[in-house]
Image (tube, rainbow, N blue to C red; front, side):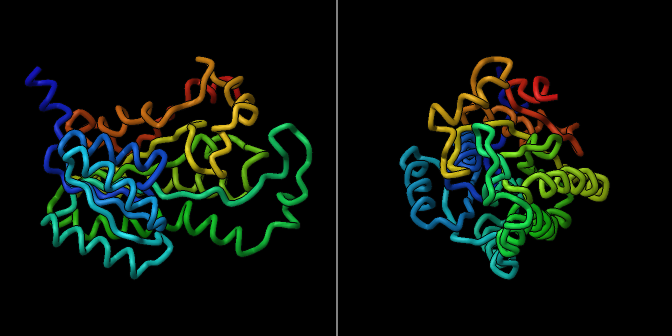
Length: 272
């Protein structure tokens, strides 16, 4: 048991999680904090952030938060520096923030959706989708590395998606190219940063019940199509992702870098 505890030991690790006030990001925060990491959550949702932090602090965990828009580059740099001062270092970063960029060109029931047609997508909607789902990963890693390189170590875990590997007609058009680019960027960063002791990996979730797309997968009718794709007959609960997050952040994941790890209940097998 002692060896197992050491293998997955993240106690004291200075950890940042972007978009950590809800959904998958909150699950990352919970497992890291529960296992003794010092966690700072970045989120733009002040109310959700306060609630998430309060819930975790009530458990006796070392968690605090900063209101940050991951699209605000000076704000992100300042937020990272604040964590480094408070914790004395930055060990682990989850680049998790993401958004649903709008409707796809089909509805979940297969009808064409004019609001998602390419000629009708507002430019600002496309730009925001790329900014949050792709560019914020660049900004997050850039700021993480400023603090990790001098220490000669660090773990960066990026939330991508199986949408990087397939085309989804019910998802906003910018989402797929953004996530595909994230995958390539993760591999490129792993190649650059391995020499400095920094590991970079991506988690590619399939359908999970979160707040994205207005939390529509909590609705049974909307969930049915995704459940039918799963090889185990259900879609993911955020608790399902905690073990993988802990693996990649801990010594047990020391030989993982540049990995794109799918966690989807087998949905991708059926889709392809």
